[in-house]
Image 1: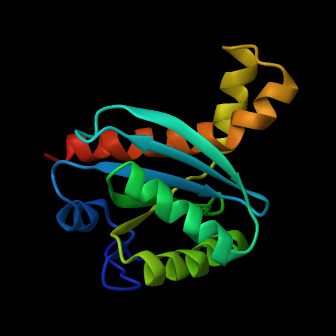
Image 2: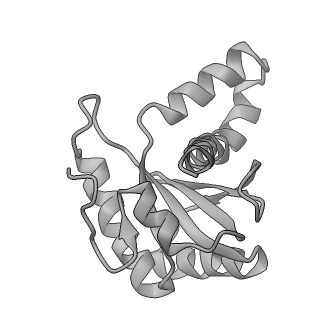
Length: 165
């Protein structure tokens, strides 16, 4: 996958291209898209701090996209980061192809800049952290794992954006 490969006008794999498409001030929304759930996180308008937002239990796209659109409006979101599940070698997988297709649908509906960001091992890393460092029960973990993974992904993006100044 080439760094500058573009899918649609404002969908990018390249963080520098994404940065050019979003305003300096404005919140970002991160989506960690799974088969059953979508973890969501957002950052502040200065792109300094990320926080868990919610976990959306997936239904039909037409239902999910309305909820995502409401979150974008309610939080003054200026761009979306979507976790791209590449395989361990950094190559596209069946899951990443599915996420890419869904990303195109999201862009077609919302017309907002989107960054597809490598999210390898995000859920594993967050799960390990929640078990070892925070000692959260399995039941509580299940409720926050997806939004925490989205926050972990978004944290990587905002740190990279900060370093690209």
